[in-house]
Image 1 (cartoon, chains in turn green, brown):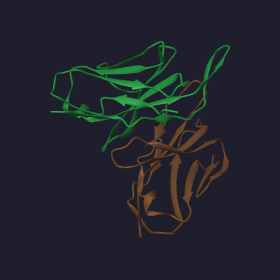
Image 2 (tube, one colour):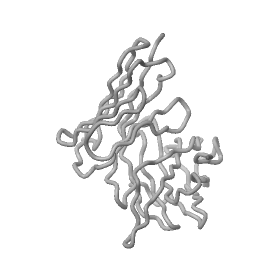
Image 3 (tube, rainbow over the protein chains, first blue to last red):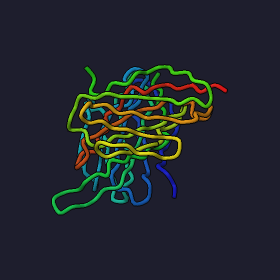
Length: 120
Length: 112
């Protein structure tokens, strides 16, 4: 079974540019989350998507956005890049249990290898 | 104060030693507790996953959760050089929330 796939693995951008990162979850996983990892702040939650809807959002500025497609694949976008956006961006997928009133996460997240963004 | 506290180390042990890694947390709503291993320049790899309090064993790894003390531990028996990595604790409320709160990570080095 293939794991979580993220592309591109490495990229270099300059300040003011924008970037789009892609994530393909494990087959059958319908919840996709994004995290930012930096040496200073560690791993921080960006947002979570399920059924093409953003379900949770972390404490990041509006320059960070994302979306999920009907096949559960997800993209995140960072506009007007700043030097501080240099980080490893990690995507994680998980199984969900759909219940009549919503959905429940199993709590197990499986991460991809990440996209390492360098902003010059 | 951070929601999850984890000593960043580094922790250096000889091969074959028992390693104890710990995290404390402040939010009593956390119900799911995880340990991830992350090698340099790689994504975190899920090692152990525990719901609520109790112990869970998987090979050389044992995870313990004490919700009354808000304290979780990971024990590694017969440590190997290949265990050298950063170990991250993580926890979440579960339910409709998949937001993990991570500890800072403990860097472990197992030397032959």
